[in-house]
Length: 369
Image (tube, rainbow, N blue to C red; front, side, top):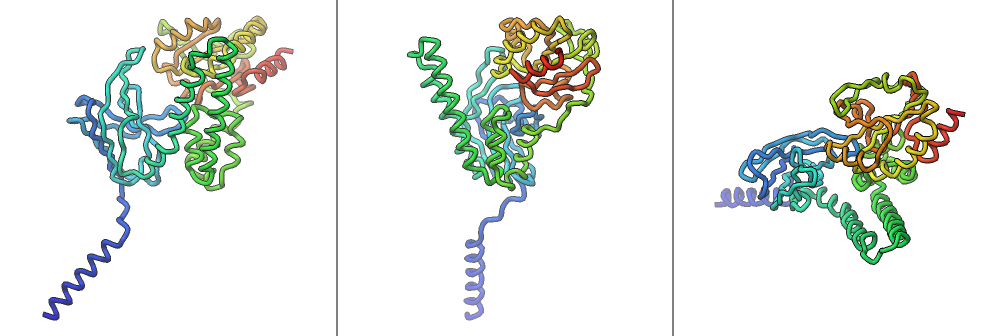
């Protein structure tokens, strides 16, 4: 009897010890989706969050409303869950855990005919980092609500009122985003939020980056932010040759576009890029001023849909050559965001990069003096 009592006591002690231990972290991740509204055979993809045009890192197929991704992460990464060739996404942090997505999505069609799904409404569980990501990203929804209440306020009936509402809105967005990013400045979350909240980074964000801790700067997302804010200088180097296709499918080389010109501005843009389109009046003025002296502009759109690009061209009436990037020129030039502009000479040597507004005007005045 004593022996049996000892065995039972020992077993109870082992069970108690096991229950008191922290559960082991899974060696890998399993991301399972239970989603109504996605037809069988639909391809679901995971695409890294960045300002680059990233390719999917994983692709799986929906069967009976269910799909599964599995693998191992060396460290957590921010991802977009998307339906292939469709609009709509669900942000999440892919970490080594058993993660579940649940909900119902509605299929719709965008104006250009592309399918779209409201994936952002999917509930996520099993991923503490995704919960934190959602919490930090909630400021974007707050700014969307503010936009509707201020800029879209029907009481703004005069140009002055609309301009004032716009100025107030963008000032509030900048302050709110800065506060959110700086609240996370001591870890990778700070630079990740810069990438997640902003569609592109420019000179104005350099002081933000400099406020990050060394740990944040040396993180995966810290290095990503640095590469965008402080790209390796290309001035004085010969740019890569490329070909583009016109509307009839004819191939046009960069060499032929340089022919007869002293300087060519290679302008990467997109119809949906507000800063790109705000720069167009300045480009038109400079083109009018210097084209007869040997200045050419070549605009290359990274739009995914030709109809959107053509609609923008109709609206903007650009007088210089325009092409839709169908041959991977943006990838060749490692374009991370738009607008991106490279000013080259007749030999294809870069003499200026990412010059816009007055900086571009000053550079052309110097070159053509």
